[in-house]
Image (cartoon, rainbow, N blue to C red; front, side, top):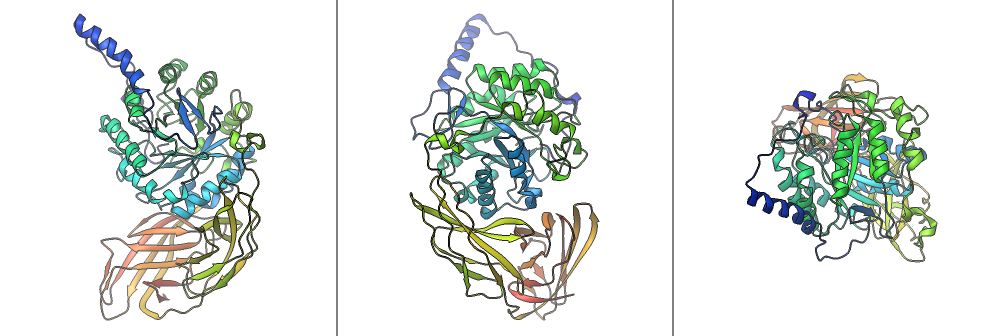
Length: 560
C-alpha cells in the first residue's frame, strides 16, 4: 500500500487501452505469430536445480509436496509496529493461511535486521502461516522522495539471507513494494529482471514475488504486458506477480480482464493488496473476492491495523484488537468468498503431510558469564531431536513480548550492544531441519555493570510531542571534552515498549528495547564544547518513560 502519499488520482488513470496503429499485412502476420510464440517460449522452464520449497508450475503456486496453494490472508505493518508481533496469532485465528509482513531496508524507516526477520519467520511458523516478506522502502520509486531501487531492496535481502536460508517452504520473498510510482515506470521491466537475477546469483531458491509499478496498480499495463519476459528472466522459473487493487479496479469487468489475462497466459498472479475504499476511487472488493475465488487466485487484504495518513478506514481491526473487527474486517474475514469461507492451511503444517512434525526438546536454561557493561555470554545444554538440531534462537523477553536477539548453531552466544546498568531477560529455543521449534528454555536475567569509563559527553533526551500510540523524541549530544569527536555511535535502552519508526540526524538499529544510533555524515563531527541533535518518531504502548543511561562510543555519558 502507498502508506504515505495518495495513489494516482482518477484523472491520471486511462479509461481505455492504448491505441494501436495498424501494421501492414505481412508485418501484421509476423507480429501475430511472434505474439503467439513468444509467451510460450518464455514460459519454458530453464534447466536449473528444482526448488526445494514453493515452486511455480503452469501458472500455479505449489508447495514442495505438489499441493496447489492459494493465499488467503492480510498485510501486517510490522516495521512500524514491531511490538505487535502477537498480531500474527490473531490473524491466524481469523482463518488466514498467509500474512504479508511489511519490512524496511533502513532507507526510509528503521531497518528490520537479521534477528528481527528470524523472529518474524519463527512467529509465522509457530502460527502455521505462510510468510510473504516485503521491503516497503521501494514504494513509489521515481516519484516518491526517498524511495529506493529494487537493486537496493535486493541488497537488503542478501544482507538478511541467513534468516531465510532453509525457509523456502515457508517464506515467499516479495522483492519490493510498489517499486515505481507514475514516473519512469517503463524501467520497471529491466529493473525487475535485474533484481531477480541478483537474488538468484546470491543463492536465493525461494519463490520470488514482484509488485507492479504505478503504485502497484499497473494502470499503464507495464507488468501485464511484460510479465512473460520477466518470468523467463528467472532461471528458477519461480516468480509470482502481485497486483494491488484500489481505485483503478472499480468494476468487475476490469478485475476479470486483468486477472484473466495472467491465467490464460499461465503466469502466476495474486492480489497482493486491496481494500474496500481508497482516496483514488472505490475498488470493487466484492468482485475482487469473487473473481479470485473463481480463478483460484490468492489475495491479501490491506491491512490488519495501524493505518494512518487519512486511510485509517483500511484497518481490519481497531487498535490491533482482534475482537473489534471493522466493517472492512467483517467483510474480508466473514463475508462471501472471504477468508473464513475459502482459506485452506498450507499442507506443510498438516500432520498428514508425511513430514517431520516433532519438535526438539527444550534447551537447558542458559547461564550467563563474562557480563560487562555492554555484553554478556550465554551458554546452555543442547536440545535433542530425532533428525538433529539445526540451530538455536536466543530471545529477549520484555513487556509480554519476545524478540530474537541472535541465532546460532552452537550452544553459546555473546550478546553485545547492551546498555550499562540495565537488566535483560533471555531464553532459548531450538530448531530442527523441518522448521519445528522446541518449547522455550528456562529464563536467565542479566544485569550489566554500570562500568565503562566516564566519557566526555552529556546527553539530553526529551519528548517533544506526544499523541495516542506515538511520540516525537529529541536527543542532544554534547561534547564536554577538549578535542573533537569524529564519528560516533550512541546507545541506550528504552525502559518501555517504545519503537523508533523514523530518525533524522542518525541511523538507528533497534533490537527489542536496545537502540544503537550511528552518526549521519552531517552530524559525525562534534567539536569540543559543541553539540549535535537528532530527532525521531516512535510508537509506544502504555507509559513512555525516558531512558536512564547513554553511552557514546562505549563511554558512559552524563544524563543532562
